[in-house]
Amino acid sequence: PAPPVPQPVPAATARTTVPVPASPNARTGDVLDPQRTRHTDRRRGGRVWQTLIGGAAVLLLLSLTGLAVAALLDERATTPPAGQPTPQPTVAESVAPSGSDLDSRDTDQAALTAKEVFPAKSLTVTDGKGAYRVLKTQASADCASAATGEIADLLVRLGCNQVVRGTLRSPDGDHLLTAGLFNLTDVASAQRVRDRIRPLLDDRQGRFRGMKAGDDTEAVEKAAARVGWQVRGHYVAYCLVTRADGERIPTDDATAREIMYDLIELHLNRGVLDRRAAGGTAGQPTDGPTEDSAGQRGSDD
Image (cartoon, rainbow, N blue to C red; front, side):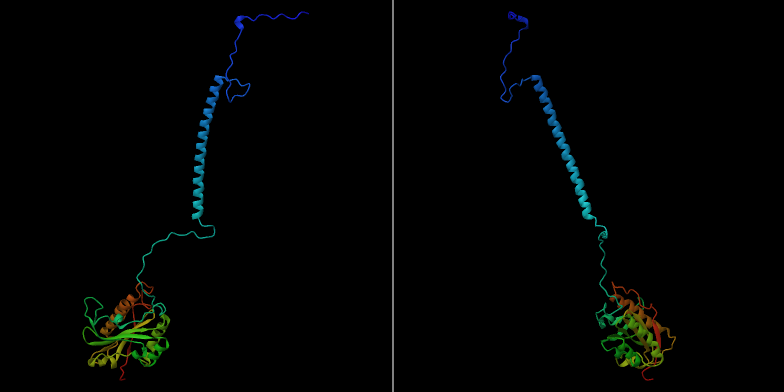
């Protein structure tokens, strides 16, 4: 059969193809569509914002996580492990004045001095009352110098290493007295001395010695006396009272008892030993404020 005859193309349907310069980055066969390019740009812009917002969210999350981890580490650092006590806050405490526990020479090592026990030539123990005149004072390592007989032996045997005493005249001038402190090893030894004094005095196996302080004071050394004593820590405080004229003092003599109370309780205990114990643990007399007392015969009997 005969080949087909080409038909003419109508002019209205004919399309002219205009060549477009190829992009340097375009691949062979790519066709650039302006509408598609704008859509791609919008999609890329959206992705950029999504990336920025996502990055900010990640940074915020990391910062919050870091704070949480730091708080956890700080809590672990300040919380002690199980089984260890929780440290308590330090509280500032006021410092008490320096002082001594008077129960033993181990905690009260400073020796007494005559100036500490009798600091002036006159002694006023109560406001409004007359002063005692301090005639003579003495500090000695020989405790037996202030006693005789079994009382002297008892003091030495139980470790007395010091006696500080003074001789005074009463405010009315009618009485002479010697008062002081025996320094024992500890409170137990002082209490043993205290418990033995009365039986020894009653059995006339010893006595306290008054200390003469001049020509007109012989009575305190030789006359019959009333004697009182009291324990405070490792000290035995004592006082013997005589009449200045050498006459015997009645057992119920109120003036003698007042003098013993003034010297033993008010002066030696509340004055001298309270100052020494300031800031320490011995705030009260070992056996209360009432001293033991007894009579002793004169040295001529």
